[in-house]
Picture 1 (cartoon, rainbow, N blue to C red):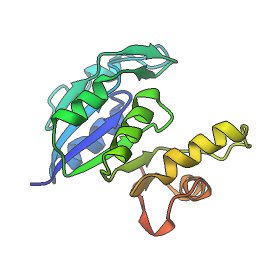
Picture 2: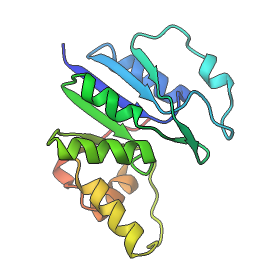
Picture 3: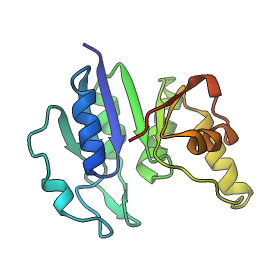
Picture 4: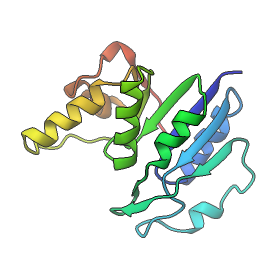
Length: 166
């Protein structure tokens, strides 16, 4: 069976449902950056307590409302083997670190972008970083047309975008 690692920030209910379905087809490990966030309802974590997939929580320093700074993500990638790796929240410090590590190791990675909306340019440095992070993936999971257009704007190959609405 294909071994998949999916990295995301929090255990949101719609993602748990998606992971449950995905785990019917693959051996799934979900690596969360955090257990909860101040801007999210903590009841989300308690829902669907039976999981059909392995869950791991990073130890790290809280960054912003939903992200984490943690070297644990690199340790996990170094010591575990997966056939496919999907990273969500490319703008998270932990995921940026994972993208850089996997790129250096020449490991393919999928980026999952959940509802990315067009925004005005935010400066050359920030735009360059977005382009570098997004274009480095070997494939992209998008929630729809607008998100796909934004991915293409930052260097995603339209032929390698898969749409998966939540």
